[in-house]
Length: 518
Image 1 (tube, rainbow, N blue to C red):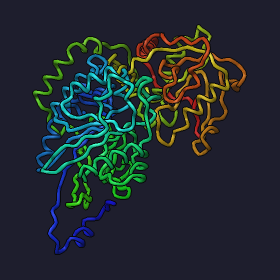
Image 2 (cartoon, rainbow, N blue to C red; image 1 turned 120 degrees about the vertical axis):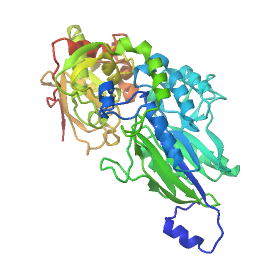
Image 3 (cartoon, helix red, strand yellow; image 1 turned 90 degrees about the vertical axis):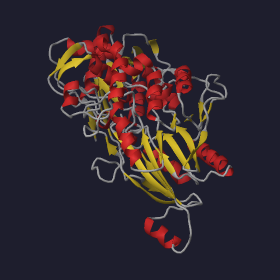
């Protein structure tokens, strides 16, 4: 069994012994979400003016130089990704995975795992992305044998060589990806611990004793996997957009987070940070030291001119769409995932209000929007279509249907069932109010459900509007799959929201207590 030792303990144990150390710097990103251009402090689009003034973060042109600088600090390194390159800007809407593949190849990645959003457009788009990559993309915890587009092409693990040593990489994807995306019925997701341990054992049998899991499963799952497996040296995480740091007061844990012998790292999202973990192994593959810190990719990092030119070239077909000013807002509309996934938020109110207003004349009383579909905030001032599409990038359509009050309550319970994990199923609503007690048992957290000012009637049928993803069972909303009179082919939710903001002059974001926390 591998042991993690502090540097002091390692020195004490190796005193007087000739032992070859192997040093490796693991550079890593996760949850990039097609943010090829710089982002604002709210993770949305950042204007050229603000970028010039040094107010922006990230962007592939900065990432080029951040990676170059990090590599200059070490003589042995790899660059890996924790998944979710897809979805999040017009670049993905227009190019699907092809632009991501081009940029990742240019940056020189050595491996990545499949994120749930890599399945947003089904196995076909993922297969095309894989075909364009010049490095391995991995997923250990799924049976893909029945999916011809992936079978025999998508490996569970890979071995790369660096500095004269073999390094094993294992991919891991969220087990509920079938609820979060569109992998199709031929991809069957399996237990994370069993899958990882199986690949560790195979790699170990091949003489590989330095093993890194690239995991798109979230910080909590990564800790559980580390606790329940042996032989994993490092887990490079994603999915939960977790900032781990030893210096940032907003961090959710230490960088790295040590669980038994395993160092866990994650670097927030959207290319705002580049993770930089320095690991020392002894000659048996035991980690003797692991340290580092995510590097903030701010204006101090110079943008690479060649990359800027290529992105500008690829942006040309998108400019007419995204630069169109569609509305105005008097204040910033907060769509921060850390807020919208646990409580009422201004962006959730806006989207739910917009959906309900669009179909109110059809007798619809309730709107439910999953917070996982809300991807950024919008700054005060002019609102462009590009900003709206950054908030709502998934091309989800308006869905209307009828369900009982009991089913609405069941849906709300599902929505708050993973509030501790800041999960995307948290329901933003309109036309109704409810209270949630996050400390109560799952399934009994929701109370005081009111529709149009009256207590909800479990036996009564209600008209509901949501998006087609939720209506078809996404984010655990399986209770809506058998809804009556379902119509999933309304207008794009982004278009509905843009038109709603534009309808009455300058929009003023607000909270009104429609969701209360006990």
